Every structure is written in C-alpha cells, then in structure tokens.
Image 1 (spheres, one colour):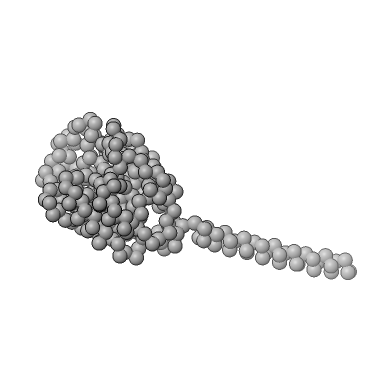
Image 2: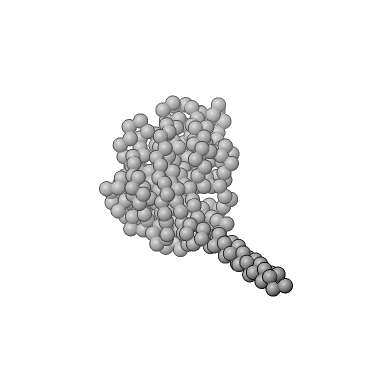
Length: 281
C-alpha cells in the first residue's frame, strides 16, 4: 500500500513537471523568435533600360529580368527607366505597345505599380515597383530646376503578418545636372524623412558616395552596402567603374543587413542590387 502510494504520488509529480516543461517550451518557442529575430525583407533595385536589351538593341530583356527576379525572389523590386505603352516598346515587341511593369508582374507572379515621370513616345516613362503583396501606390514628381528630363518618386506601404509596417520606395534621379540631383535628393528626403514607418528606398540615383547628394541623403538614411561593408560597383555591366545604384533604409529603426549582392547580369547596362534585411520592432 505504501509502495503504491509513493509510486502514485511520484508519478503525479513527474507528470506535472512534464506539463510545465512542455508549456514553458511552447512559450519560449513563441517568444524567442519574436524577441531575437525580426521581419526578414528581401529587396532589389534594377534599372531595366526601358525593357530593351542594352547589349543587343532591338530585343526585349523582360525574359531575362523576370528570370532574375524569379531566381532570387525579392519581396519588393524598384525599377527605373520603365516604359508604359510607348511606341518605343512596340519596336521591340512586333509592333505591339507594352505596359512593361504589367508584363513583368505577370511573368513573376507579383503586383505591379507604375509612376509616370514624363509623357514619352505616345505613352509614359518613369518608375516601377513590383511587390509580392497587394498595395496602393503613391507617386510624386521631383523638381528639375536646371531643366532636363522629369523624375518621380514611387512608393507603396505594406503591413506584414506580424504587424510590422514598411514603406518601400523607388526613384531615378537626374543623370544630366548635379543641381537637379541635389534638388531631387532633398525633395525625396523631405517626403520620407518624417515617416514613423520604416522606409526602404532603392534606385538608380546617378550620384557617387563622394557627392553632395550622397551627403544629403545620408543625413536621414543609411546606405546598406556601406553598413554591410559590401559596396561594389553597379555600373556598367561590361566595365564596372562606379556605384550609382543603391538601397537605403531610414535611420532610427533596428535594421540588420544580412546580405548585399550585385548580380552579374547583362540584360541592362546597370546590374541589379539585391539586399536581404531584417527589421526588428
């Protein structure tokens, strides 16, 4: 009798201990990833040369571009030199005008957004964004005090399943006049700098790290390639000699830069930049 009672009591205690251990393990499995890790975000920026092969004029490059995206599977892609229903696209598409972003969205299974910077060739020319997630886009025209080609800032907002929000933005700054680039940089900063939502911005910014425009943008944003120590040339594909394509993240947030890669592909004269980030709350 005593032996059975002792065994029964010991068994009950052991069972309770097992239940508590199981409960604590479950709680820890929920808490530790949230406490130690953040939201992983994979982004890309790519100047796509209006959908035409730079090194094989007259041929479309959309198959190459979509293959790169499908291989690396970024969550968001900022694209520059994007045509929408221009006569220029018809010359590389058997006489049929193309909405380049719509075509790429279909080829990658992503959502596409277009921000028109200027009317061009009986259509539009400007910025594009691809996103894994549905969203609404906002587009802003940027100043051109010295004249030249108009530019735009295109942005979307997304809330991840854990409640974390981000703004993803893309732009293409003036290639002609330093005065335009600086004015456009200041305009972009003024639009985004006061956001309480973390911002990731990519683009062909046409400035180098020793320029006044770079000094201006880094007042408010971090250069992820510099943060990671992976600052490599992005232009041009055949003769890499400068870094003018960037991903920036807003200051004041907990970013971890997991990887920065300049992808050696020749669909355009620019090479795509792929960045994997982690954002903690």
